[in-house]
Image 1: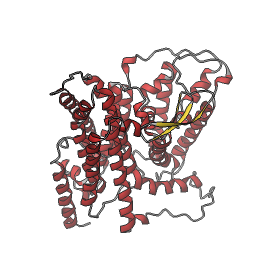
Image 2: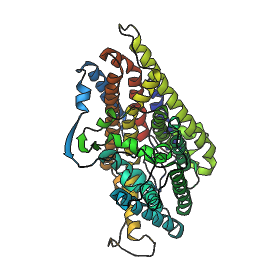
Image 3: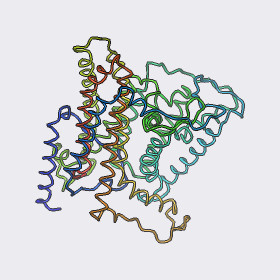
Image 4: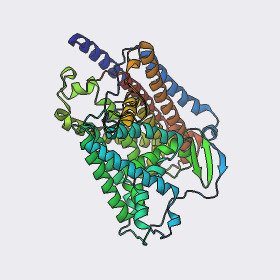
Length: 499
């Protein structure tokens, strides 16, 4: 790319961004989703995206308009579920910290958790002693590609699989089998998930600002220290520690609310994506902030790679100086993006409450605290859709590297899977038709995520307010927010990237 092409791309990029500023509530919002990658995760989309972006925005607007005129109970019926099968026992969360000495209490989930711990230990050893190339070492490929991209998406579609494979609970059970173990401390309820919020922010700082987050030995140290920290907390505070402080357990539990399947009171149930958001208890303030930070960190991850962001921090994308030169701007931008997003969301909720009570015969209205916490759950589909869209191309490429690494984990020339001569292909990025198909898939995911978010927010609002009119009025500011987010999200998918 020469300087003239760069200037042309930059001008086009700034034109689209300038247009986006015409939409209210867009001034302070930065969208897309989380990252750290072993190879390139996006491409410059040199396609006429204006029609696609406009169509996506109009689809969200049309959904909002239709919800205002459809029957009141339509959204609840749409987000309902149907039972599939009843089971003899139900998977109820453990409320009491005591551990029995009976070996029979060591469940199948505990066994799979122990197996997961052993597998993680093997990956850490490969991180230290395997290949130094992150595209050949199984540790970074598994962490950043198969788990952070693939498993998170599976969790959001099929349900809470993390309960079976998290690498802590089984080891904790084993440690507690031979004697009655009572945790030393109790986590105060008011603590909420604030430790998890901090953990998520620290994780994203490592992913986005660290000089080499995919270096195998460096990643092995970080992952090992994190596992040990969480396990010590688990031993001191009991299993509730995972629900309050382990950011990935919190994140995956939230995403499981979007899944098609769930096990509720001993019954396997299926429903439309997001149906569980209506039956789960309203989140706390810390839980609401966690969801918003999840979206905010992903938003900044997409934005900080664009020419526009690099221009703001004074970096020439054609002469990128390296990650070490932009650590401070990245950290400051990450924190600022989340603070601004939480602030904008809070303002939208507050304005919605004002509109709901203005000129209303029934002035009964939920508190700002309750509305802020309750409606935040509707943000989950947007964050999940961006996770899919942002990482789709990364997964298509790096999953091939992961397959090759699984066949030769020690980089010794072995071929355990019988792949023969195996070449990683990126040919799908060189054809106009395949690139267009990929981008349309990403765009459809983003639009569907926003439409689902609007639908869930509407159903939640109907539960919060005394009348349908109040619920509809309360959603106007958030509807503007979601329309603006759709626009900028689709723009980010196609924006030129220079970092």
